[in-house]
Length: 397
Image (tube, rainbow, N blue to C red; front, side):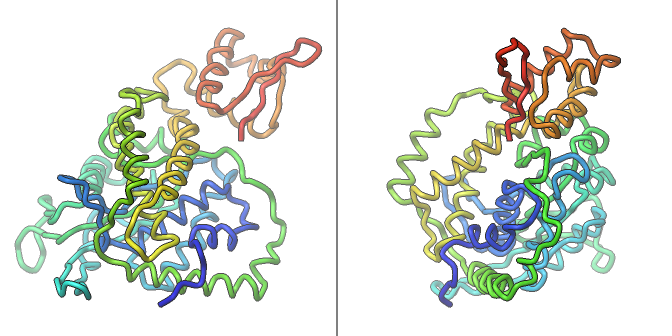
């Protein structure tokens, strides 16, 4: 089937042009949707590594401020209408594994005649940290293990009720799009899970505010909206039919090698919490590039344009990723970090003296300086001085 849109991600952003959620949320949700449609039917062979396009994407923001659930709603409806296997929000570990096993399917490669059996499932969870906490230790271990796309996965904690044997799941593929708040991460996610293991496999997309207010979305009630949605549905079905091995163009390979060789050995932001992520950064880039390619082309080939778009998105997202753990620091300033961030984001520009007066009962001038220094290092704020010599704190959107 021929596609109706030049780029699925651009089409999704256009469909959601009046959505109050930040564009970053919508872009990453679109990527997760493509991953859900591709399932474990495409692969990138990187020598000893087989890269599949599943991702663990977590939208992070203050409660009721960034429209996390709204960003995910349209995508979930598209996947449901297309019949892509999804896991329920309130699933338990046992239900998740059962749902994964139920998603097992076999397809025949039209070119080779080979039969591919895989178990592909996407988790849509608007309360991801709460979902994770229910059976934290074992579930974190399971998700960490499942992310790596082993040929076969065995649940060794429970025997099958019928056969009395261990539950074996062939070629598992878990894809996650979730949402939570920094506070829920602090409360529900074990401290020892931060920095490596599961969180190293996650992309945290952090925002502080919705991008604008839409009192009534007349666009979503228009014939043009329905027509565009139908095109997105059609093209998502086309994407879901892709299968086979991705190849690298020479231009992609050159750009990737130069970038990878030149990448600093140590994480350039918040080394303590993202050291594990940094060691997997190249894997994230390759996965995203596969999704970017699938968004616009039926040819399983990564191009220089895919590389450039992916790196730009990744670097912009990384600037705010440390904010995911803003309430989880070990320092004495951790509890104040989120409230101060909220005030700055809400006002847009605030004087330093006003900020100190607001929190005068909870902090000192010295402590506030340390907090503002941290926020400036992660590009959350910029400090300037007006003609009267007053220091102004500006929120960097």
